[in-house]
Image (tube, rainbow, N blue to C red; front, side):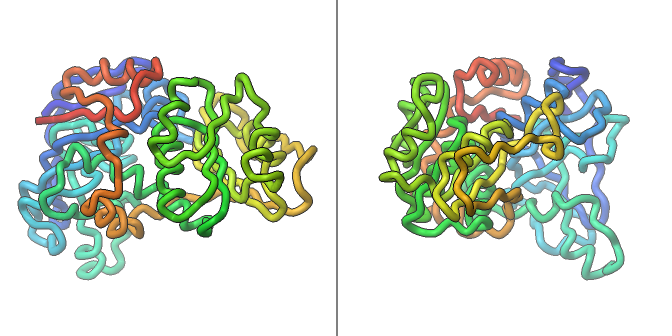
Amino acid sequence: MLAALVKAPNCLEVEEVPDPAIGDYDALVKISACSFCNGTDRKLIEGKFPGLAFRYPFILGHESVGKVIEVGDGVMNYNKGDYVFRPSAVYPKDFVGGLASFWGGFAELGVVCDYAAQSKEKPHTAPLSTFHSMQQVLPKDVDPVKATMYITFKETLSWLRKVRLAPGESVLVMGSGPVGLAFAYCAKLLGAYPVIMTGRRDERLSLATEFGVDYTINITKENLVQKVREFTKGRGADLAIEAVGDYSLINEAAKAIAPGGKIGTYGIPSRDDKPVSLFELNLSGAPREWTLQFASPDEPRAHCEISNLAKYGFLKVDKFITDIYPLKEISKGFELIKRGEALKVVITME
């Protein structure tokens, strides 16, 4: 099969690799499409993702969707013909044909694990990874290309529920990439007002109103704290979201949040940045009571909700997916992301 390999930092190539094998509790999947996660995938390609020991070459991609074509003898929860989220050419930390995997969704074939069946019949078996919990079955008649975007919505909506965003609360989204826009959109679905977004490029911020943003701030031209106070009638934001992996933004957010407000981190910093344990927190200008929260998404819990919102037309998937390329042209899609000329780039395998 063909797969996208990172062979060295900044070296992304498509090559033939061995097909994955399945066990008794696995299903083999013909992957239809996989979208770029602009932050994570770029850091992986550039060798800057923190906390990982890189072994080259590795198979990239974790926002994948595909069709089950074969099931192991012990599988109970997948059927041939099902479309599933996050099939992987090989599980993280495992190897196929000598290749490592960082989720492995940019490949023609992948595997999903029926861990529910495995744990029922072999209760003492440890999972290969937590990835299996995200490998959920899609509703019928869903476009697999569009469905790749559901993963971002599931992450952002579940994250907002974890930090307990309440209707009527104000939200400051720091970052105008696809994740930031998804946060803004989901915050609106949960009744937030106003939703404020920061960024550095006027052309991107001009699009933000189409994704539920009420006000924008170009931080290269405007004073963030002053504008947030203006937009919230002097109170400050109830929730600030650091969505880009730049922890220095926490200090800016601390000056712009309301008393009792929260700052939540979502973005992952590059490995060449200071680790959060060494982050210097500046409390100047911050309210006396506020919370800094490190939260992880609970993607499986948002599965049904996002599926239903998509079914009834509440998710503007077409606005997020700006470019589609075949697997052999994956480098073209990545170049668009590096230049900031695309929101979501989807790679198709068919």
